[in-house]
Image (cartoon, rainbow, N blue to C red; front, side, top):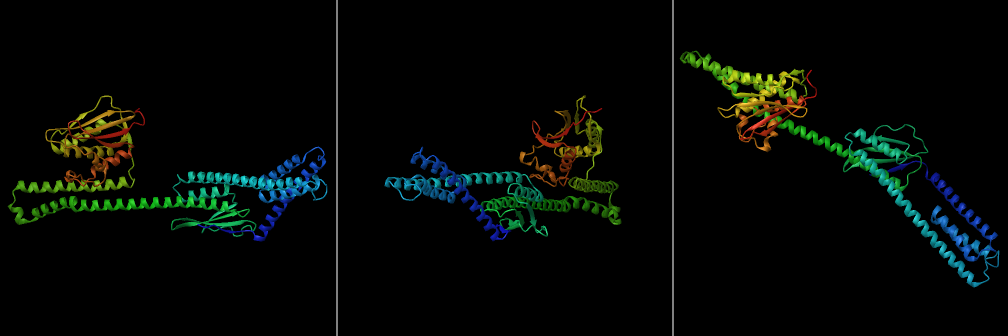
Length: 479
């Protein structure tokens, strides 16, 4: 990920640098001249030690303000000005007292060393400040990129950072078309948005001046963070596609299994019974009771087939989000009573016991869908209810919610299966769900309850069994 710069000609940049350096050296010369003038006016009142300290101060000022080169010039100019104007004999570089020559040489060495150290300290302080600012820019950019899950939003955040924090006047992403006629005075920088072996495009940034080496590094680091964010989004999308494909493959396999077993079984029974009734020789040997049994078998298996196909269609509607609720104020006790009546009609026995308080509030819900969900749960519970026992449908309230509990006294569902039994086509390990079902009843009930904004969970029944709990939110009170 190497940035490429295109901008103003090198000769223009060198001219600007030379002009800036000439201005700094002229300022140093003016500073030393002013200091010399002051010391020359006060040379009868100040000692040589005083003069050397003031010249040393001028050297330090030059080092802190303009770094090493100007500080060296300040030290040399101070040395000769000191000797020429303040050391006897005046206005000559000769030294009357040899000891004063030693003082001058020591002053020159001290001025050079002090200037160098001051310039180095300033450089280090500027580097530390620059590094802190760059770290702050990277931190802000990374914090802004972390929650983003859209490639366009990531590029927009990178564009903002490069423009606001790095001072770019124009920011574009190739292969999108940049301006046809860019300003010739701008320095153009190109950086690849690359993470690993994947390239997500090229950033084109235009700066008013050619960026320094540290700006190049910061720009590259910012682009690298954006490329990693783009890679994260790309990998997330790939993982979601992989999960969707895996789920589709699992559902396809389960559907094929259901078609090959649970749907073919009633079809086989219907076809065999119909063929026997249609055969004149065989039908003549069958007793009327046997013929009625065959006709009953055809009707029963047709109902089973209709129920299985209906479940498949209902599951597809739920997964496609095509379910539209027709919500009205309904009594959950009335819904449970209709379920119990249907069970009594089909089994000719009282297999359901209702337990509802008198003050259970009405609830806004889709009567038909909730009736179907409760019927599926009760059907599953009855399949495993011991003979002579009754499934209990209980209603109660709890903290802004109304609960329907279907209590079964059969085998307990292991904790690791309580979530999985709500999945489409899931078959329990002991094969219980294979009896008359393709594993869609609880999945459909779970989907209907979720469409109502509620939840379906499983708990243990005291003494053995499973209790299915439908929790429906009570968003408003009945009028």
